[in-house]
Image 1 (cartoon, rainbow, N blue to C red):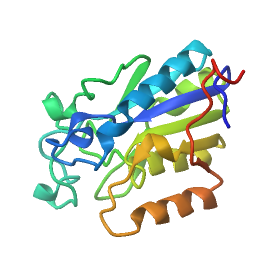
Image 2: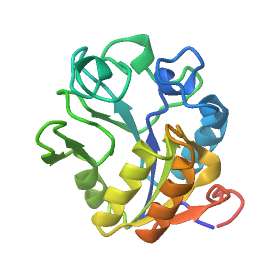
Image 3: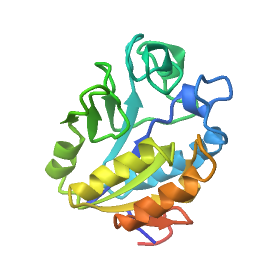
Length: 205
């Protein structure tokens, strides 16, 4: 079990309407089911002195990321739209890290990628964690086989210890078995994939 406290950060990935509501343009099945539990984790992390970061897809209307311009995904999380807003029940505290703002593929909270050239550039998240003295991150949110996975893998590339609690994510499964393949990839990279969420600070000190 992981206990929050100094040196540990919580990263909540893309808990947004287009992913976490049935009306969303890229609904992740069961995405709304994790909102209350994620709120509880964020509260516990904050109470224990852990920083909390929320990533947010924030795409332009036209981007190669979308199928309408040659990508693979339906338009989603377009900047300023209701679909891009956080789920109404999400209690967002801490810094918001927006990604994909310039038409890039914003899979990871740590980096974005030009969909044509493949060139990656960093977001501010890595710097924020370094400034906070964090050596471990807990990554939760949507979706486990895409943005959660990529955020966790980038964190490992930065040398961080990473925990992904399966109860606090859901999977797209664009192809059958994507969830199992994602978990295997995470574990191969040294990510600890837990079947239960991290310990609440008011339960385990």
